[in-house]
Image (cartoon, rainbow, N blue to C red):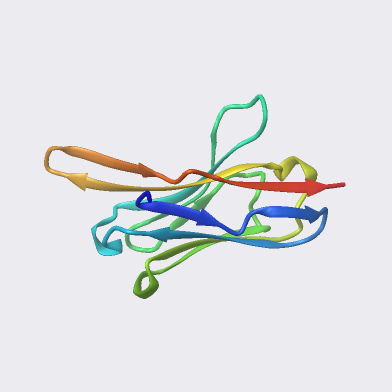
Length: 119
C-alpha cells in the first residue's frame, strides 16, 4: 500500500457534493505542502487546491468558492470538499504531498480516485 491513499470518488449529479479523503502514512508535521490535483481524459494533470505548512491555501480559479481543502493532522488525513459540482469537474483526482529535505524534495502521489459528474 502506498503512502498516500485516496477514497471518496464516485458518480454524482451536477450540483451535488462529494468529499475526497486522502490517508497519509507520513508524519504530517514533516510535510511542506499537501495538494489535490486532477486529470481529465485527454488533458494534463492540473492543480486543484493546495495547502502550505502554516495554513495558507490556494485554489484553481475553476474551483474557487466551490471546493475547500482541509487537513486533520491528528488523523493523518487530507480532504477535498467539493460542492456545486459540474460535469467539467469529472476527472481522476490525486492526492499529493511533499517534504523539503536538505538533499532535495521528496514528492508523494496517491493512486487516484475517479470523480464522475453527470449532467
